[in-house]
Length: 257
Length: 283
Image (cartoon, rainbow over all chains, first blue to last red; front, side):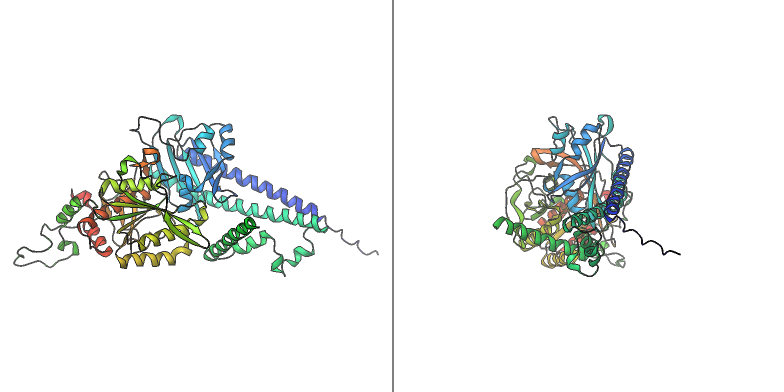
């Protein structure tokens, strides 16, 4: 009777890479779901264009995570745009959590007023009627749903009821956005693990990764984010404040150096 | 917009003056405080008021002071900037890059034409820092002893609750009247939920100065906030919808009351608004 062969060492690198592939699929699916939701919202609210603004990497800007427009070319342009927080109605809604709508003054004989012209200039669209509602999860604002114009050039303003419906769609978008954020965070962690393994010449999920349980100072960013996410909202905000202050400090120190 | 429009209960309004005159021989016991106050006289006062001598701070995205609609009513423009770990309020150019603050100032000026408006810009470059700037701007407006502060903004972040509550109390005891836009969907917004200020929801009213007062609700006042024609940047106009635009209607009404009753306190203003409630139905 022979003893069983020792189990082969799993290919940790392949496993983590596979995990990244799976996570990427989930990320794509979450974006598809977000687009489907946006399409449903656009059709329910009878809007010509719809978009989902989220914070960009540069915190001074928002970017479109999803956008539905009259042509794919316009959508491509919109997805590449940055919308400044302090110069746009979208930024205002993101900052304050208050929904609003506007329509250009029908009495105006001249060129209609356009608030934050960046999107219009890049796409060739002219915003005539506009609705923006915050996407929020509890007290945290994750993004802004925007609805622009009516199909066929109709200039009928968005109604108060449509604003309420927009807020309901925003609640659904918030759940999807949170899922998207978590998937994204998981990918960052897995990529970091592969990078660490390459740098140290060890297998991913090796001793260092195991030690993470014991040694908080070796936590990768994703684990810190996970810890912060488990905190109550008030403490999360304190951590966010602290990080922001540190970021300003480091940035100034780097400038000084 | 939390519920469909429905008339607020209206009280029987006495035509008797606030004071003076011969009392009736056998007065019936008063059943409601507003039976003691003449709504007709209040309406006359409201009609006489034009905001003269009243300082109104508009804490918002800035104000395009050169807009023809504003007729030089903007007497100062300030912005909150970060200085090290703190925030400071400093004079700034009379500009508005968004258009929201100009709309709010324009609505106030439309209905309180002699009020002096002070713009306090608090929407910063970084969206995550807006709450701190908002607090600093509000603190500054209270320190400056503004008569009315229009807050067509707020925050949903609970970490600001305590500080905002203290500021709202400071304003209340000092006599500065805060008027705040409510967040009317799911999420409480600060400072609108505090009892020491006047929180405003939006509703459609044909008369821009009509409003309803719902005593006992966190958001007590409903005012016109559906497609309000108001100035925007570039010297132009837009039609706006949101609680943000209902709020300045009430700020204008408060400025009018304060111009004819300069020593009126926040508590008294709320009482007067309550007595004027349903003014649309009474006309």
